[in-house]
Length: 280
Length: 348
Image 1 (tube, rainbow over the protein chains, first blue to last red):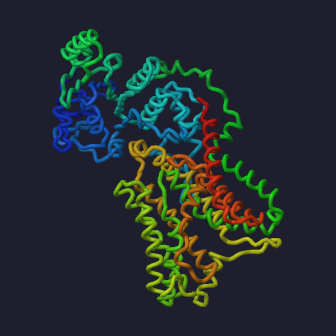
Image 2 (spheres, rainbow over the protein chains, first blue to last red; image 1 turned 180 degrees about the vertical axis):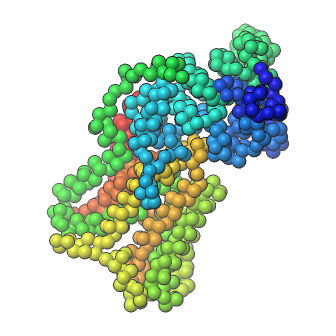
Image 3 (tube, rainbow over the protein chains, first blue to last red; image 1 turned 135 degrees about the horizontal axis):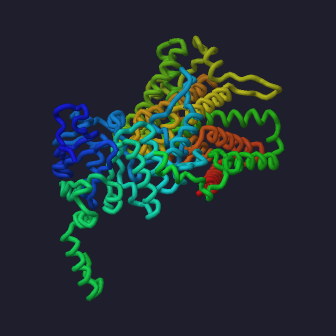
């Protein structure tokens, strides 16, 4: 698409990414968790980060979400170089993160979860209280706008299915005016149909003008909705592509480790012969 | 964006309308209310004097002394933490108040005020240690429990020369302080202590905080999923320290009641009460793992405690059996709560 450097004018002569990572690295003690990773997130686009377990996806997400600080490289929000202090800092800059397993507090009602951390209040002094009616109604209408019809916003959110919970969390981020939505493996624990539903809401968030970072290890899901793809392997960037420069098959092959997969298939073929005797 | 996923916003035909009964079953206190009725009926049948109005005053008083502490302990448990030091903290608070006034020959109100500061400092210590060290609250407060127990005995012997404090009954300010912390009214022959008022106010405030304030929302969140709460910007550390300060405040109220009911304090008192507060909170529907419960439930739990402890006396049984009943009640209530919650959440 456009050149990554938008030095000249921040005004839209060149479209400036909402969030940009440039050659970012992160170390935990003497362990290189992430090195040389570059990523652009544009408004109305979905940038996918693909990688196997241990590839550094969680580290990357934690840097963007403000949970960890990067140790090297540049992290730009709206073209301005920054280091996020904490998750709240990230939220204030419009970066909302939806985590795979800790998106919500299961025992709390849907409406309490929806507003958690940003509760509206009414009244003053000692009578300052939650605006419960507003919270309930807003939750219902915000979910409805995303296409989720939830008649009882009072039910504990834990009683919803995994897909519905992800959708509520996405709707919450959209409602609170996030500019960048970071999704950590939103389809990892879901069935085929549920995954489809969640992908639809991700597309809805993109159509609403958000920049989306989709972290996943499923190239099929990524290719369905993604505009850009960044491949991570053992903490380093193994590839960066736009949608028109790569096919699904190629993406899948790179993601699965190409030659490694072929090797594995040979190994498995051999294993069928003598039986499951020799293990790892 | 209305066109895209908006089309899928059809009414889910699998979603049944929630009946009012199911809504009622979903309340955390329900199990304890059923339990309280059962206990009430039981003692009404086996103990003749249980139904007398005077007995009721006694039962309520016993319930209030536990209930004052059970309300903030319930909030703390909803926030996912324990406080094993709550029982002896009450005694510490009374001792500080009494000994400060006596040693300084000051107006007892000075001692009362100093005691408030010291007790809040104990609470802050618990909260601070917990959030700094990230050790389980069970260990932290077990430590404070033992330290306070030792300090209560040690300091009292060192300062007063015996295991109890000197009387402050004839000191300045004593009558007015007694009025606030340990007075009573007689209504129709029934003695109603002022602790009932403290209890009611604390439960009402705790319920208000829990259900209608941002802080309350955060209490549920830090207990039900601290990481999820932190990720959306909830100040987890501040919330937990606030909860420990709440327990400390109630310990101060209880401690002053202990002091002004008589005019001396026994330094060995309070040990074991921390478990009774927790039991009252659990009977009242608090989940031991946090994230769920109610302050009103803790009041019902305290009421069950009052009925059982006094009912055994009215039934003229050996009071040694009290602990057995309390234990059985705890198990029954927890089972009932678990069952009720399962029914209520079986909406999926």
